[in-house]
Image 1 (spheres, rainbow, N blue to C red):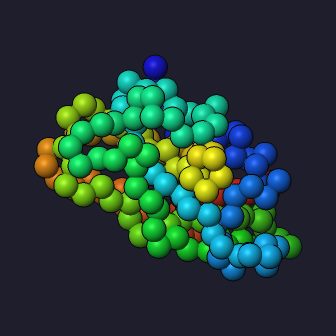
Image 2 (tube, rainbow, N blue to C red):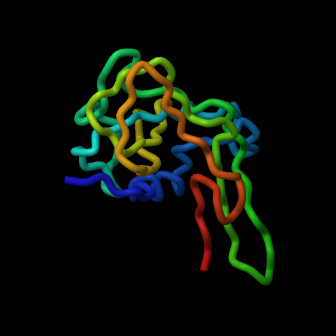
Length: 159
């Protein structure tokens, strides 16, 4: 068993059916309200990967100060894209704030976070892995990358 960093395969199909709304400025939506996305931590012994379709509490971390389901991803920026006739197009999105779990004690090793859409039946978006961690009465912070075509948390590219 091992967690694998990837965009969830189900998410790709759901994008084409307009299931996920990352933007409060989406002109295609009548009531343009961004969905709520959450970030749940998973044990190093879990198996979450591209085939993960939805949030599950199975093998999620537990401990003092941690709430099942994780934390809400706040400060999200609107998605952006490139538009050039000479280079491949890229759509990208990164939360504008770090994802933080405060005053937690998580004594069993964890090494992955699942980003999922709690507005849309907890549908999975992506899995991100990092080195195995534990936390004792502290804060665990996932620092977000720059929101650019080459470093954004989520990137979709044409070839």
